[in-house]
Length: 226
Ligand SMILES: [Zn+2]
Image 1 (cartoon, rainbow, N blue to C red):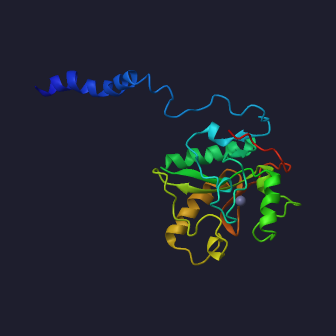
Image 2 (image 1 turned 90 degrees about the vertical axis):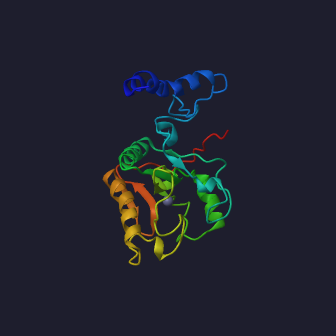
């Protein structure tokens, strides 16, 4: 078998193989590997007010901690893990995600819009404005214009940001003088892109960003759960 024969007859088979296997397994594979809903919204949610981020780009990673017990209060605050944001905020985050993906990174979200009733639930657990925004004033999360997030590598592994999410101590401050050069560089990847797309940092929490190009009212919209 000479090289030309290999090139013209054997190699093309390798390229066809995935397609052939796909056709053969079609009966079992009626659920596509990555399902993207055509509509940007769930029925009943006002699309002029809200976007569900994952429906705009399925490459975002969600780790919505308040829908689990893996958070600083150790209790579930939401019924199910979803990331809703105001349309302009979601669009800006989409731009950040696109820019990060070009560098081999991506975003992982811990908290997005937080319904106002959930803010009261948090406040009842921890009525301390150092850690939880007073629900009478509301948090930017209650307005759908703040997110808690970090950067992951191409394998989905979180970059070293110096502390875990929701770590309450000086090490989480964005101006902490003791951070390593790696942590400083990793935080800069996130901060530079977020600031360039209209977000501002919060001094005491490296993971928290608020959108500055529009303001929104506090909302009590609660998303549907399956
Ligand atoms: Zn936050």
